[in-house]
Length: 115
Length: 117
Image 1: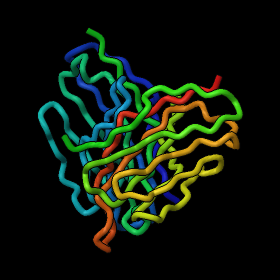
Image 2: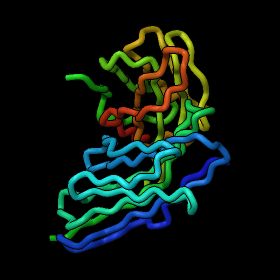
Image 3: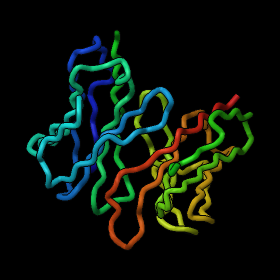
Image 4: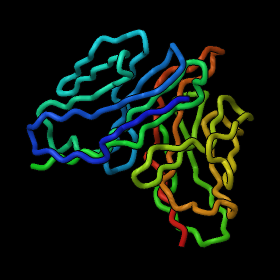
């Protein structure tokens, strides 16, 4: 079975706080790809990052960082020094190699960053 | 600019009417997808197409139909058979093709919000 769980439905923080969005996945495939998307109020999903299952290096891009741990099947996303513009719904997704027509999306985490 | 264009952005429908949502891409992608998003939920796959003149049902295809006559276009028709059509609809594309598994990211349009009156 393939499944992505984002247990945090909604998170509220004050600007400049750090925040971590959790993502736990289930898959029987040995090769798969993990993604994070941001959905601002406008509705369009914006691609943030793609990770393959063989690359467990953490990644940092500006204020964003991602922690991929295969041992715990997690792919968590941290925003450092959050800003109001970070307010959005964030989705984690799984794309297995051998059923690549399917993306498995989590239910999303709504992040509210207050000034 | 390369991207995906969905229209209309907002659409109202009376019960019993069919409506068609447009999706056009100029990214030269082979694969196109339609997703449905309901409040507080993730995206659910309606239909997808890996190549022109071919498409497959996704997880919630009942009450929907699609066509793929051109590489650039993948319109979605919400038929009167769809019992609960009020939702946000997202079209997406990915590179696809080339005979190898497509492992890239999806590119999304801005979505169409359908409301049944």
